[in-house]
Image 1 (cartoon, helix red, strand yellow):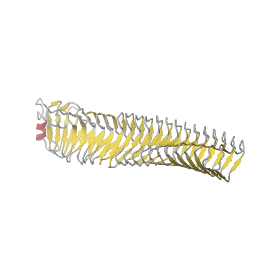
Image 2 (cartoon, helix red, strand yellow; image 1 turned 135 degrees about the vertical axis):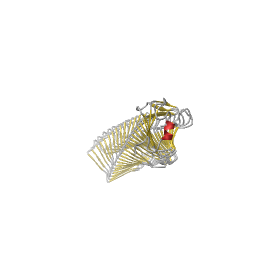
Image 3 (cartoon, rainbow, N blue to C red; image 1 turned 60 degrees about the vertical axis):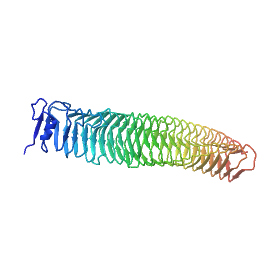
Image 4 (cartoon, rainbow, N blue to C red; image 1 turned 120 degrees about the vertical axis):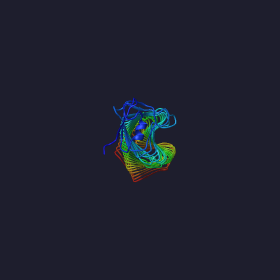
Length: 530
């Protein structure tokens, strides 16, 4: 049996004068071909048919004065090349309470809270469509049946471009979402969104927001010129792969409210806030991500959060590269912090991170700075060419450094300032402009098997009021004394070697009986020990 074809023309030259008349006559599988013109009618379709513009895209406009332009109550409808325009300030242009509505190469212009709405058991399949709605959202889905946008443009929105709420499911592929007063993509409730190969730009709220118990997978996307790039504030599963956020007026990636997302191969570029902010007891995994040219600390972990960061690179931060604070407990492996304008890593306010195999190089401040009750462990880390000290500990800070290399600091290699405590194990301190290790009054150092070479001043300088214990340490090639003790406070050297220093191997500037020396080797120095 041949397929039924009905033609619509307002001038009476077709089978019907209105689209609604043709739909009422159409059998399942029929094609309704519509002649050019503007049809001010609201059409409800209950059978599986095809609606198309007879002379191509943009020649037919369905624009009722009130109500939706198109409502689907049947199983499936295909619509191609039509312009659907809404004038009702309360109802969407397209309403799909059941079935699947496929729109190909259509233009949809809304004037209410949503341009297209999939609800109940309904779903949308949009391909090569252009959607706008200055009064509200572009596409909203609360239906558990998955909707799809592919190769679409959603722009000029009064709120968000794509919204999945309740138990809604939406996949967005190869689309451009731009100029939204809300989000580019918003998921909340228990909804799920999949975003692939999309570009999101110029949103007044986060480009992608995942809230409440919703979940999201975002792959190979770009978010630019938004307030925040990606905001994860959900208990649901969120995965971000190869997502680039750039030129935000706020942060790049924000993880909050106990969320635990996975970020892999993501980039944050030129963010006015942090490149990555993890807060509010959040966790998650961040792997092989790069954050460059952030105005605020490129990566900040705070608020009792405990993420795991692996292979993360921070470059060209205007100030601090990595800020760990507020009782956070991050684990970081193979971190690189390069060319930060301020200190490379700052640990403070009760933070207690573990850093393994990190590299910090060419920072404008200290390499690693610990203060204000900060704690932590550095294992097998390298700090090179900081303008300040490689490691600086003060203000009730307490740091363990093991198996690392600290080289070419512009100040002291290791500086333990007032109320700082440092444990140094199996670490090399090399070619620093000032003393290799400096311990100020009220500072405390415990060093074992440390090697201090080529210091521009003393190898180890222990100020009056400081405490230090050196065990099996080696100090060579200092421009002044190898170890200089300036006070009468407890200092011990056990099994240490002091060689080829231009001054004395060991010099006690103030006589006292609290300097304990055992098994000392002091040879080939420029002056006798004193």
